[in-house]
Each structure stands twice: as C-alpha cells, then as structure tokens.
Amino acid sequence: MSTPMKLGAVIITMGNRPDELRALLDSVAKQDGDRIETVVVGNGAPVPDVPPGVRTVELPENLGIPGGRNVGIEAFGPSGADVDALLFLDDDGLLPLTDTAELCRQAFEEDPKLGIISFRIADPDTGVTQRRHVPRLRAADPMRSSRVTTFLGGANAVRTQVLAEVGGLPGDFFYAHEETDLAWRALDAGWMIDYRADMVLNHPTTAPSRHAVYHRMVARNRVWLARRNLPAPLVPVYLGVWLLLTLLRKPSGPALKAWFGGFREGWAKPCGPRRPMKWRTVWRLTRLGRPPVI
Picture 1: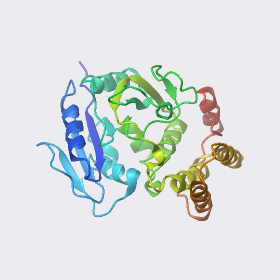
Picture 2: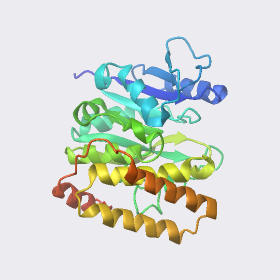
Picture 3: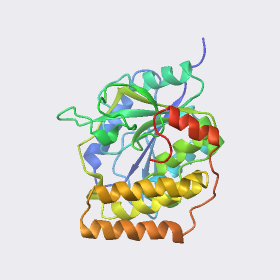
C-alpha cells in the first residue's frame, strides 16, 4: 500500500474575521483521512486565537495576497517540500463537506500530471456559484468539472512539486491575476489544471470591485501578466482585447481613470522576469478552450 499524500493548508488573514477563520479551521480539522497541517499567516496583522496545533506566522507588513501565500508555502519548507500538496483557502470560506481533502488526494494520485485543482465556490445561503468563479469561458454550468487554464486563488489545491519546478506566486502583483501567472507557468511546464465541481468551498457572494484598488491592480497586473508570460506577438493582441472588453463594460468615470492609471503603470514599472511560454503551450491553451488572447 502506498502512503497517502500529505496535505497542508495555507490561510492568510488580516485578523478582521476571527469567527469566520475559526469556522474554516474547524472545517479543515474535520476532513476525512490524515490530519492536514495548517498554517495561518497574519498579513500585517495579528492572528486571532486559533485551535491548538495550528501554526501561525505574523508578518510586520501586508505583503498582499500572493506575498502572504508565498510565506505560507515556505512555512512547509522550501517550496512546501514537507507536504505533497497545499490547500489555499480564503479566511472567510468554509469546507462544507468532509471528503474534500480525500478527493484531492485521489485526484492527484490518479493523475500524475495534474498540478492544480480549482474548487467550486458556492454561496453558503443560496448554493449559487457566480459565473466569474468558474475558471473557463464556457461557465454557464458550474456543476460541470473540466480541464481549465487557470484557477481560483482562495479555493484550490496545488501539488508542491509544481511550486518547486516553476516557482511560487508573483509577490509584486499584490492582488489580482497572480493565479493565472502561476497557472500559465505550470501549463508551460507540462502540468494540467482541473476545475472540480464536487470540491466545494462556501464563500459569501461578493463583488471583486469592493476593493478600493481593484481597477488599478487588475489593469496593471494584466499588463505584467502579458509581459512576463506571452510570446511577443501576442502581448498587444491580449492587451488590446482586454482594453476593448473593459470599455464595453462601461465602467464609471473614476473606475476607468483608475484602470488606465494601472495600465500605464504596468508598462512603466518592471514586471519581473520574462519567460514567454512556448508556442505549443499557446496551442494547448487554445485546445483547452481559452487561447491566451482573452
């Protein structure tokens, strides 16, 4: 008999949702199978009281979502090497089913090239999954599992071998599109990503634009994402498509001003190392239903 995959969990918090955090930690502890070692990272804030056995790391400043999660990864050794896979969970989420961890183990064990699993996010009151939480273009049926080309940042599992091979999340992004950056690098290295409708994280329905920096970060990081990862001929195509889509959505004047400010910032500031994906990866993304121009 082979040894079951060892799972860890990384949760970042600003310390402002202690009740939700405790409920999430309880739901992780109730998962079937071997115990999941959990690390809570206080991202520039003290960590609220947590159950015995849960490790904590308190950062003196807010490093952003990818930066905080990277600290959580390293708490499990270099690139998370102390475990086989890591769950990344939002601190106001909840695992309503007790078999999610076992389903993750089974999925990774059955498919050696599966690198990342994206969970289905459902509203705890209505059970509804927002269209934007289905990481593919054909998102009308959230109950359909499939191969995908990106994943949801606060509801996923990542094989640590992927992190060791392609690196962690881009810390400078701070917020927005860091998942797609990691996803593209993983796909370029030959890994696959699955969206699994049967692996559920309950999370209250919210609008991403509730964050004050949303429009600027989205635009800036979209430029960085393209500059870092796309073959040169596709960079203007990808950004041109997203410029058009943004205008078609008719954002408010202040939102559009913030968006264009972020777009300019994306060109003016360093984006980090450039490692354009192979053209066969472009074709692979296209066959999976999302060519890297949208």
